[in-house]
Length: 179
Image (tube, rainbow, N blue to C red; front, side):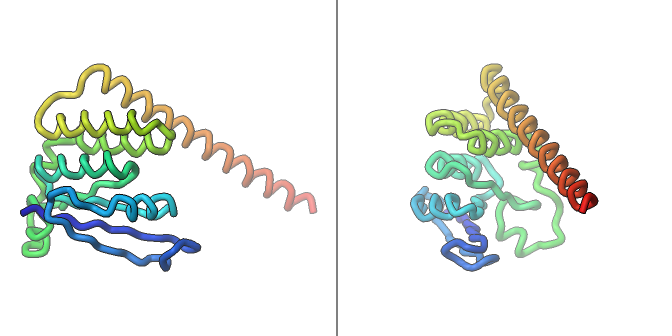
């Protein structure tokens, strides 16, 4: 039986209290409260899937991401599952996760696609590709190109946002000096 916990946090002005975390556990069969998790995300909360750091856990996390676009992925920094972290907090690293850096890149791509407002079918295709990669298949050239395009688009938007914010701060400082 695989276990998972979900961390859902609401921010100020939302249904819950700021800093409140809710943890849900599953038996790994895929039964998750998708509508409740989508509500958390719409409220600008955080939903993190923390399945085991193995093929089955990664596959399950991507299945849930297909149902609830915008979730984040957490894996234990050591060992295969969270129980190993609790039993041996000083243990070594997570070899499976460290040997699969492309999985982290796929999660960044999924977050970027959500931020860019890509359609549900597009997000669903990312999760399908990611599940295949988790099972050992390579990313296709087409998927790599789409991923790079989305990541570059988000980087450009982020850069422009920082420039805009910086300009507003300079403008506000200039206005303050003129008084």
